[in-house]
Amino acid sequence: MTEIEKGPGPDAVFAAKLAEGVFEIQKCNGCGAHVFHPRVICPACGSADLGWVAPTGRGTIYARTIVRRKPERGGDYNVVLVDLEEGVRMMARVDGIAHDEIAAGLQVSASIAEGANGEPAVVFRPERGAS
Image 1 (cartoon, rainbow, N blue to C red):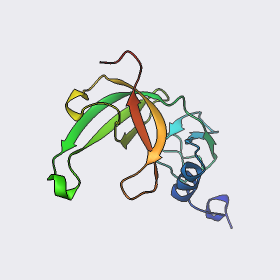
Image 2: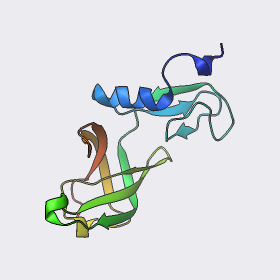
Image 3: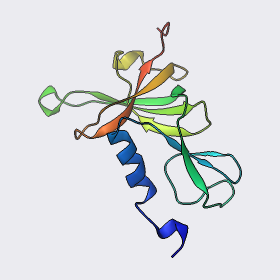
Image 4: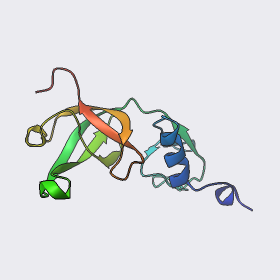
């Protein structure tokens, strides 16, 4: 059995860490590249030697969209792409600011909050001083 075949997959590990209140991403021990979305091999060098590290949690909004829904269907919500300082991009939402105020270039910080289905999820908030 190879190392890749042992234990839970990387998505399950990521979800379990969030459930424990821990936000971590992978880092390749071969080439040093940060990796997100969780994988079994490094997309940069092909190594299967991936570990878990805590990112700074700081990032910049790359793009956003607002999904418009009727209030009786849950109301509007935002979906953003965030470039983390570690060089990876992730999809999430931004809380603590009006949807229309979210724009590319906005500096944000990560936290763990409740996702759409009640599961833990990475959510971003504007950094202090952001408009």
